[in-house]
Every structure is written in structure tokens, then in C-alpha cells.
Image 1: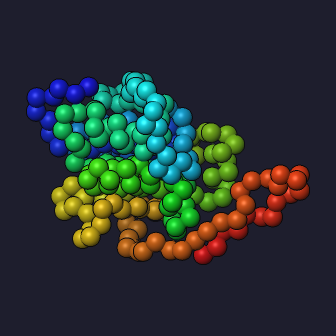
Image 2: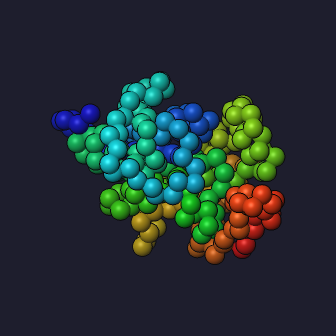
Length: 228
């Protein structure tokens, strides 16, 4: 997939929710209006995978079955996809790596350090490529319904709006670069946000969580603690 003679500045798009993510088509369509896009996403969901890597695996990008050129998937983590995409999809590196839009928020240190979406952006940053990770904060009802049904229809309007917001921010990054001193940005979009919603630039808040797993002694665990 290398050997290009002359390549326009291009965007690498990845995620952690896999090729089946309902957020992928609207974001891809919007980004294609800004620059050439190459897509490399995991074949399966890799939520909570952080920046796990598979350096000993034989990772082979394959056509993803999504309309358009340069859309691939592979059996790897989001960070794997970022690494392979940066170094092997073209003879020139991407101008920007976009990761997301994640199904669920990645606000606060606990989720930020656990997120595969953010992990892909971190991998890009380590390669010297500016990166933006996008996530949507869903209500508990909407998120749980997606987890159970995997029906993309209720999420379609949410991710159409999120894609529009992400593309405006990406356009700004392509023209003006990242904020001074930043190597990547993580953007959390409220479920009901649209292009008129104001933005707030924040620092990462200190958060943590309690047990995520059943007790090995068979007792019901305490409710997970998410501490601000």
C-alpha cells in the first residue's frame, strides 16, 4: 500500500469501536470533504484497551467493505491501527490522526487512561503526528440500549451531529494546528450537542473507579465507585 509518487496531505481515521461503529460512516463522509482520508480500524471492538500493542502479531490490513477507497480493517488494537496506518498505508505520513467518534465519554483521568480511542491518539503523538480523539457522552439509557441491542438507528442523529462538530474542529486543526504546547486533544461531546454548542477548554480531572468485576468469592461486588 506504499509506493505513492505524490500524496496530498491526508488524514488517518481510526477508532476503538470497530468497523461496525455507527459513528464511523458520518465521520468518514465529513472528513472526506476536508482532505483525503485513509481508514484503518479494528475488526472487533477494543474498548478499554488503552494503548495496548501487538508487536509480535502479523497484522494485515484488509478491505473493510465500506464504500470508497482506502478503507481498511485489521485484527489489531486502536494503537496498532494508528501505528500501521502512520507507517505503512502511504509513503508519506498523515497530517493528522483522528480517532473516534467513541461510543461513550472519555472525560477524566480514569477513562482517559483506559480508552482505546485515546490510546490511538497517544500512539500518533509518539510518532510525531498531531492527533484528535473524539468521544460522545451518552445517557445511561441510550448507552445501555446500544450495549444490548446493537441497533445503530437510535444513535444515527447523535453521531451525525457529533461528526459535524468533529469535522469543524478537524478543519481548524488542519489550518491552525493544535493548541500551543499540546501534542493531542481529547474532545468530549454531549449527546445533545450541535454546531451551536459552546466549547470549553479544560484540564484533565482526577477521577478513579472501584471494582469492575464480580467477587472471586461469589459475593456481589459493591457498586463501582467513580470518584471525581
